[in-house]
Length: 588
Image (tube, rainbow, N blue to C red; front, side):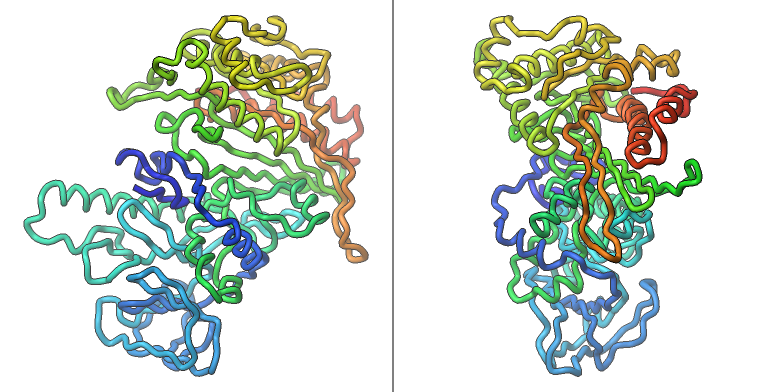
């Protein structure tokens, strides 16, 4: 069973095989060739959106921007035509021929032609604007072609777009058992098929329908102007050392592009037809006047393709330190000729744990199950958790700098026990002012019950307040459920967690730079973000949304101050004025 989204890793059960139910248990494909990735990154970066025609035969798909002798005028992706023959007029071209049976990809040859007079798919053609690659679903593979997109707003580097419509064309012979790519239903099932065979047909139908729903969701975001996998700060860093490679954690169609990366001689065709990195998440840009200054506010969330899945089906870590439901969220503020951004991240509690609702799916909160190594002794029980969390923290620190953990789970019950375990393992790894101990030493201290817990006044109480001494790795508890009855006061107490005037957050800083002008394309970086807040609850949904909203609203005032729109007094008055979010009606 292959992942239906990134085509890497393996789906561990039928239940997790659907688009919304877990997708891949280990989406990291260590066998991908780094040279292929670099070639692909170079080949299709800065692709402009230009429509092209797709021709369907019994054996091939042709992606053609060149003129064909039998090519009709097509206006819009809904219009189809039938042709009896395709033939190129010119002596050379960079169009693509995709073999349906072998999944091989090659350039079209001069004067090449195909007969389309027989077969169920003969001579069909339509208009597309980009190819996302070849996606491998649990039962078969599909060529994915974008036929419509819409604007999601504009950032300083260019336009953001979201996919709103796509065609999925089946790879393989058209006359065998498979799926009707127009209707999204199983076809070619012989009479007298067994119950298990019919069930497989139903599973294939559901898989395709869920897959096609993805392209109607608006969750696939791209830009023809810049690499959307990178934050403003990473894009600015790239100008110093040339074009950056994609952030592969966030390239949702990475696996789909590999067949094109491996095919030789397709450099120009890749630039022409393939869509540059697509992220799975959210993007929106709004404009407002603040003290007669135009301010553009953008919000972009990028979900990791590693250890993907919905709540209950995917929790905790894998052995590489990737956590479930990991999302990088960036708020971008532009005023005049300067831009500022601030990044936070969220992710499942970085331990090996699960919530199994298979016995009773009606349970709102299935029991929490922590995975322990059998027969490993006390230190051995802890070692896997310590090693996994250490890898996770190292990755965060290398990417973002200082790490502030904000843990929002309850302080009692199953959540409290899991939250305490998170805190204990984390603090056992911290050494000095942010160093990391060896995982074996941390596991030994946990097994012996000698965990060095930082000041109880800071870590255990529901309303801790911040330490005066700063560390590269800090942990803060805040039981958000306890404040649902008075959220206005709860917001203030959440801000107090990070010290007076959010001292801990301010120490992480924000990114601030000038923008290129007509006179100079140079970007002058005035400030860099040096740390990140990692937020989690159990689901990384409602409570995490609320907490990140509070932080984002406060940091927005700080960003406007850095951009010269507000002065310090105005920013503090704005932060203290009222409750813009309202009381939380539901926190989970």
